[in-house]
Amino acid sequence: MRRVLIIDDDSYINNLLVNYLNQHNYEAEGTLTGRSGMKKLERLNYDLVLCDFRLPDTDGLKVLQHAKTKMPNLPIIIMTAYDDVKMAVKLIKAGAFDYITKPIHPEEILELIERAIHPKNSEESSSTFHENFIVGNSARMKEIMEHIKLVAPTELTVLVEGETGSGKEYIAKAIHYASSRSNKPLVAVDCGAIPKELANSELFGHIKGAFTGAINDKKGVFEQAKGGTLFLDEVGNLPYENQVKLLRALQERVISRVGDNKTIKVDVRLIAATNEDLTNNVVENEFREDLFHRLNEFRIQLPPLRQRGDDILEFTEFFIEKANKIFNKQVLGIDDNVKELFGKYNWFGNIRELRNIINRSVLLCPGDYITPEVLPDEIRLNNLFESKGIRQNSFNNGSSDLKEATHVTEKEMIKDALIKANFNKSKAAKLLNIDRKTLYNKIKLHNIEVR
Figure 1: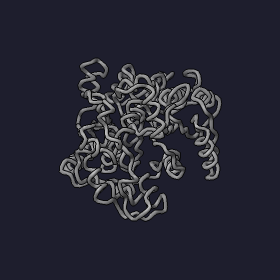
Figure 2: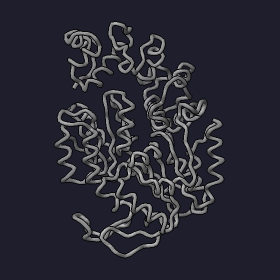
Figure 3: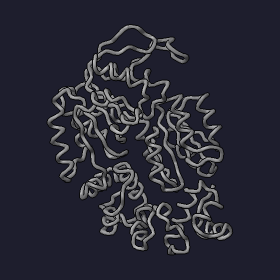
């Protein structure tokens, strides 16, 4: 039975999730603080962690970073009461499997846990991959697919550039399954989630006794991908000193396990991906120039979802079909108002954000079509922010006076101010140009959760 640790200081949510997961063949236990959660992670083995972002003694990012130093491959899902997609993207970059926003719906949590604990990559074949890979009709994606057809049969190292959540791993899989190595392993590793001190071990393996905790010999990902493809996601996060060994492995096709003097020949095709500007990292001496040129034999620049036009609707239909099967629903699609909202939204979290929103919307949808009422506030109110001249980044352009806001946007501005002030009410009141007492009254009026 898989073990799940829930870290949330809301005892109601904690107990709700523990009981729900225990009823669905998981062994779940909860704790109310980040420190107690981190202590449990040091003493016991878990298959997954559900962690609230805002905790009384720390935050989800610190818990995530602590857990990854001990168990780099442990899936961690972050829960947050505020729809802050930019923070969610930061958490994904730091190694979180995914994020979910409150209010919590247990069915949605269960689907996410199943996806994290039971990945289908090991069972995936070329045919099953292509059933789940959507190209879209945008000119840019059609051009990328032509490039994939050209580069896949070669042994060139490919560098895929794109924002977090834009589908870089899907591009890597498309290259792998169109290559002569398609019947061999495809091994993916997130360089951003590997602790600095464990990077060499994860990449190249180690022998028993090489360091404290090395109780057995271990194969690194280069050996695991023998004859196939190695996908290094977020390669820009790889520590500088580990880049030297990576460059040697690519140039000489040999590796050495940590603690061992023997060399091992490796036969892999490398695909790397990044959400950063590696050329700028080279200028800043944060990434080796020689390694950059070695990775950049063929570059694919993946556009963000907001630049893909009608592809958004194609992805939407696909995710609705998947969500219907998961939640046993029969939602037919989205109405015209939602289509308009989707077209104007920025999609900072890209395809990942769209999938999460469709899952939740299908779960909450009472009829045949998804309507604006079941969408998160940041999408549903996006047009209102634009029409009233009050944007979601209003605190950066100087128009943060709460007195200028309409009633419908007031709640969103207060939530935004609280987040920017790190929940310091005095600072939030100053941002909003109101006194502290008025802020308290507004928080109570709009039933805003404050921790």
